[in-house]
Image (cartoon, rainbow, N blue to C red; front, side, top):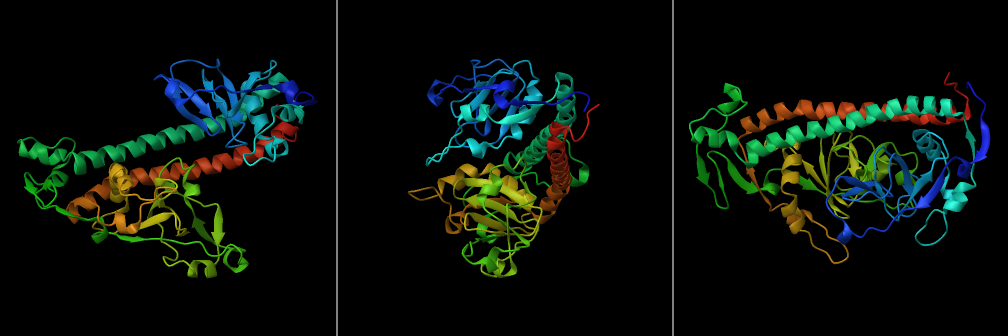
Length: 402
């Protein structure tokens, strides 16, 4: 390291302040991000704090740190940096990620972080020049991760727009009905669409399509949780096992990994067993509607409906169908403590199904998009692992920045 490291307290580097109340009924449409303990959760018309800023959770989600480059509104569940004391804001965000928040958490039923305790934590502080160099190195990795996230959002939107055009708005069918050439389609693909509609029992659909319950098209199965008191089900587990909690932080509808692993004996206790790669999972409760295609074989708990797809309805088609019809799915959820959509209530929902040749054409169009999404996710995980490995070494001076 070019400069010496100073032994100081976190309070010498930054001053943390509690965020502000902003009930939902008082929020006005705008472009100012509202930052909660789990990140940007909404937008508002008024600025609470001038950016750039650093925010972390005071209650709720504790330990995550967010760098906000523009003006923002920190909610009262957060702590925000009121004063950087001349230090680099981006460096401060990385320094804060190394803090042990649990040591400053109270023992109440809803644990919170005491900012005064945070201020007393000892840290090593490099010179401002080295702060900026460290922030640049780590920030370059985070910038690429963010670029991948935005790229994935665009790719996912492209797939959804195509699904909407072909299977919701029936644009190619309407074009042919009007005597027009379907926009953006080659002759072979255009020929797969009919030029007329037909009446079905429940809807008006393109000629040659079918209107059937989704349960007659795909297989829907549930999962389970083997006894957590039995080590043989969990200890040294090698198979992925997932709950809806794994889906809450997904940045795209692809499941790459899970928090917990399960043994062969554990898998044997679950009726659906180990589901193959490519299975579509939908959370059935707490909340209803998390969706992801598995990029790994996985066992599931009882909080999912697993949708095993086929050539009649591919996983990409069903993913987009579920997203499009989520209001209908949620309307069939029941329960007093929390809403839950059962397999029994999900299976009768009707799906307007194209012929298998058109289904195959859709899969061929969108499969490369989801393959790129998956590749970007893998790259982002790798970059994040490099960032997390470099962070303590750079902050301690083990790796010199000049």
